[in-house]
Length: 78
Image 1 (cartoon, rainbow, N blue to C red):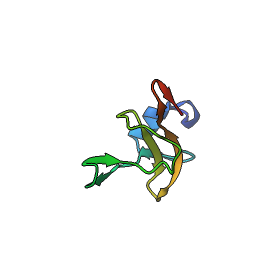
Image 2: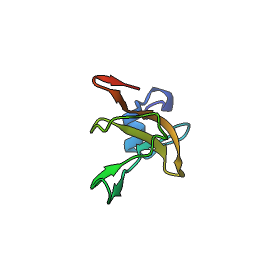
Image 3: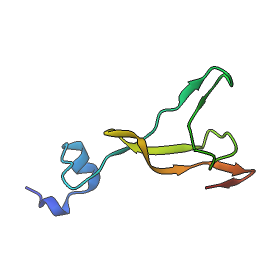
């Protein structure tokens, strides 16, 4: 049997061994009737729509954004 420390992250994930790991996911956007589009709330930090905009959250608290990436101007993302 392999030493637990030598297993890759992928192998550990496949075997559902999440000890000392945190699994994060992209936050699902909400449909906005007014704009007829899916939106994420960046609280003013992102100023332009883009399919590349995303937010990363943990399943236990979908409101706490761990990381976000969004367009602020042509070709510029934060």
